Image (cartoon, rainbow, N blue to C red; front, side, top):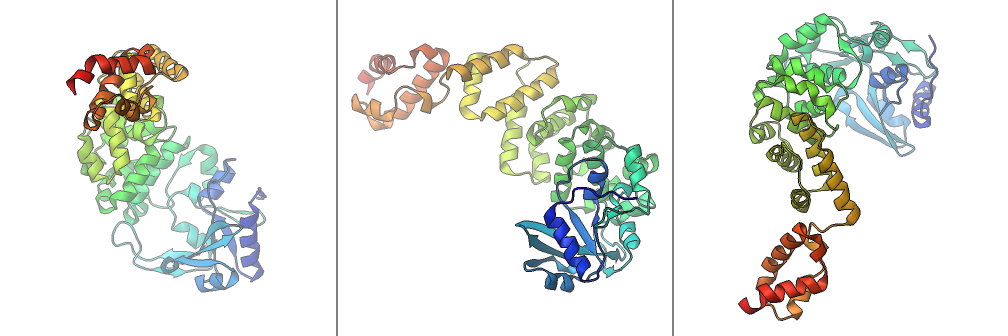
Length: 396
């Protein structure tokens, strides 16, 4: 079977270099899966029967990024390329990593330790496919199936359970029945996996085109240990929400009726994500259209992208289009209506010039901003100076 596809020049150079020294070299894993699907790979992984020390000697720039596990990163055409020695794994003792690895020259043995058949495919430099587990057929049939016995694969590395749902949510694939059932049964092993890795996989799944497939997984209680113990059927509408991590994550927490801070802390979410999720959840009070004034108040404190995410979640939560809100949002932008101190027609220096004491300026600017948010026509120098004179000058 020949699949001589458009392999990037820097990858071809790496493969030709290693092959030139007499070693086997293969594209492997997700990049081969993507190419067979007709999708441009995000990155390319290579495996070889050359020892890491040999790879270090073959390239001008080579970094032992994962030397313990046989991985060397080489730099070609300013691109980082991971080249890993083909290997077999020893016994898994912690539901994540093997106790030892042994190098091998048999590509089928290397592929046998991988998670799913669609990722257990290799391709040589001529486009020839090595597919000992039928992954190419599973790609055609859009099936996700473990390599070998699912209970062994998931017990070896429980993160594969999260990866299964990530692939289900990002690809138009369904899990084979035995693989899916085993994932549910062994999901309790996820407590052995680092929270950081779980969070990464969860966000990738949530932002996928088919994120609704997480429903049964979460409903099954698989994420109880981070404070997500249940989820309503509303979650099945997650595909209606824009594919940003904050919007999708906030919607999950809403559907789970979860303590957002407890979950964010458990998942070690970064502070920016916490703030954006809190903003969305705190403003789900807008069951009706958001007025122009309220929009400007929101815009004053938050980025435009945050408002767009909020409206996306509101539309799904309340099953309405928020047409007038969006019209007002566009009108505010088109007319450049003021909603921040920077957009006022006067500033602190202008106020100082008319004799107002410095310590009063901040409060005056806040008062003026509230006035022009309610009536944009008053945002001109003369009007605002007159307002100051009428309301503040004698009080100073």
